[in-house]
Amino acid sequence: VQLVESGGGLVRLGGSLRLSCAGSGFNFITYSMNWVRQAPGKGLEWISYISSSSKTIYYADSVKGRFTVSRDNAENSLFLQLKNLRADDTAVYYCARGHGDYPTGWFDPWGQGTLVTVSS
Amino acid sequence: SYVLTQPPSLSVAPGKTAIITCGGNNVGTKSVHWYQQKSGQAPVLVIYFDTDRPSGIPERFSGSASGSTATLTISRVEAGDEADYYCQVWDGSGDRLSLFGGGTKLTVL
Image: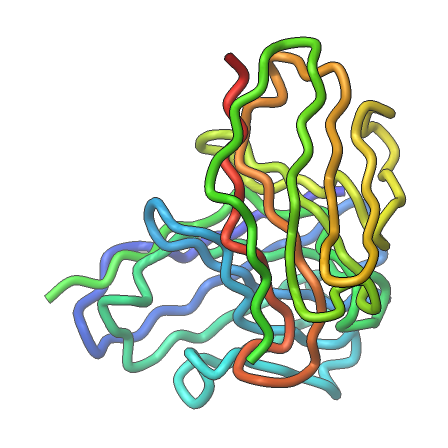
């Protein structure tokens, strides 16, 4: 079971970025997925959940209206579109598999993370 | 909004027991999950559903939850256990439907 993120990088204030997460070694279509971020030297912050069918989506208030989660089950891929980026969005972004299709469960496994740096 | 409170740091000698707490209003009524994050690495699940251990996690790791406190206990601490530990619950309300505690840095003396 493996998750691999990509798409991070340096972006200007107010800019946009699209993160990807490729899943392998498990039946991707049957699991919910999450995005969790970690600012430099700080703790973990959950930011988004998407159910297996994409019918149910949740966001933390800190990113609602600016970030959009989606998935392509045919490609075993998860995405996070980041828009109107702010300095406090600078973080390592992790994708993490949920517990079945329940938002109430745990996150396992996690990808290695991709760093997003927002600069002025 | 719901808050999970962890002590920022804990130091334990090798071979001793580390007890990491996670405080929250009636946290014992929620399902608490714990993660270990070693320096420069992604988090790893070590306890789920308060007390269950994923395959591959040593029996030295155990969890409990009651009332307003959840606890991660690491018995016979080893140098390799040095890491940040985070508790996590699903709250379903507020500004963060799923949330983490602030993390506890475990130092092995």
